[in-house]
Length: 420
Image (cartoon, rainbow, N blue to C red; front, side, top):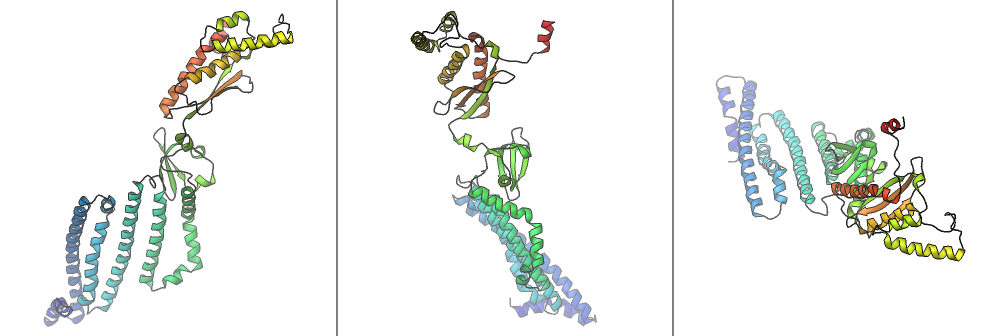
């Protein structure tokens, strides 16, 4: 059907009303209204038909392919937006023909169609971006990267360009002149200040590999302690250990200090660093009877015998007066206990011997002398790690009386009652 035939059909009602004696202006107005209703109904029907057809074609195609990219296209409504292009093209073609007698209506409808086309192309671009993001998140290389941030930035630019074009269509002002206006630039900078900071932060986070999705971070300032589940342009979402969620401004990741536990997760063990406070008055030199008693502990018997031979040899050479025990060299119950802890940890299969392992004194405090155990458990999972740590200290706390040592503890009401 050519343009002349369409124009003839579009004016049938108008010609009929004029022949019946209606004024020409009213006849044109009624004809425009009726034609508009007919076009809207026809376009709506065509839109439904094309949308269902194109979506079914996409689904049939995606079922035959191995790649998931086309599946994500369907999820992001890409076929739906593409289907809208067909009715839009038809409307664009019909408007000048059907409304030939109404230049004003033609101008308004064409502007509306152009505005709709700008919005539609932005939506198509958004669906492609979302599809690309979802597809890239499947790969190990990009799965932990803040892809959402880049999508949001590109969408901001896309909508910004779209808005400039729409303003140009509605007002006739040049897009170039609008973009170069100092006032407009200032407003844009003011409105999108946080967005720009977030964009800069997202780039630095990604390039410097500061945080990945799945990292365990501790950010005391915001009360966050858990796994990063999402990194976008404005915020980082953290699922805490109590299953609550904390949102952190993306810019804070480079502006403030926080703790990322990825190094521990990638290493060979999780650190155990805890102290037992020994009552200092319970520390003493060991007598021969004490040493004989401690030799019954199989882990330290070879050490005590070897150590005592060296001490006796030194004391003989220096002619130390052993009538006073402080003279010469002596073994202490705390020193033997420290060696026992070291031997116990080295025999523990849950401890990684390839990483640092030591037992050391810390500075004495009003609560006693801290004996710090510093080592790494092989199992880094939280629950198992806590069980390993608890088993170690359960044993050591129970072992201290065998060395005539006391663990410091503040007196309780029961202690004061016994004194009374």
